Amino acid sequence: MMAIGLDIGSQTIKLVVWKNGAVVLTRKELTSHDPLAVCRELLKNTPGGPLRATGYGRHLVKEYLQCETISEIKAFALGARAVFPSCRTILDIGGQDTKAISLTADGRIDKFHMNDKCAAGTGRFLEIMATALGLSLEDFMTEALAAKTSHPINSMCTVFAESEVISTIARGTARPAIALGIHQAIAARAVSLLERVSITDDILFAGGVALNRCIQKEIENKLGRKVHAPDAPQIIGALGCALLAAKDV
Image (tube, rainbow, N blue to C red):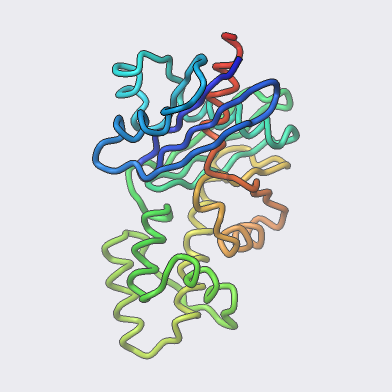
């Protein structure tokens, strides 16, 4: 029988279907102004089975789809160990928040910290900075990776950082240098959060921002150790939900 996991994030909703010890289906859509409608669309033509949900919108789903919910921390701990069994530390940078989680040797949650009161250093922050530079997210990353020098960004407040970037452009600073400086500032913020938990190898980088190779590289440079990003870092929370739902089968 199938088991289904949903992660209702601030920017995207992810669905994972688990069957016989493997992921057999994944789907992802923008959250939009009506996350419940998006969830229903994602669940269309999905085989029946127990459902678990996590993320910002999990309580909405619980009420209308009558399913159980779990915390994002638990969902990411379960999902991370499924894709990377030796994982001891998890960094999740999503659309609006950042989470750092440390696990015990047997995969139990030891400590966690969240930066959920400010979008600084998150996916939304990256989007706004890329727009300020007149770049797509892909080109933003590419220019940062190609930069020979970096120009530091002093403010991590989204509004002030955007103003600082615009002013820096006006002074003639090279765009790749600004792009790299922004990536380095985001990495420094992520490392600061990780340092509030016990950083133990192996480290898994999850969430949409884990698709950004420059952020991963800069975090590795600051930590002085390897950071592993799975092929599909955005589905880790939904996978954790599906794994827990599978226990009800």
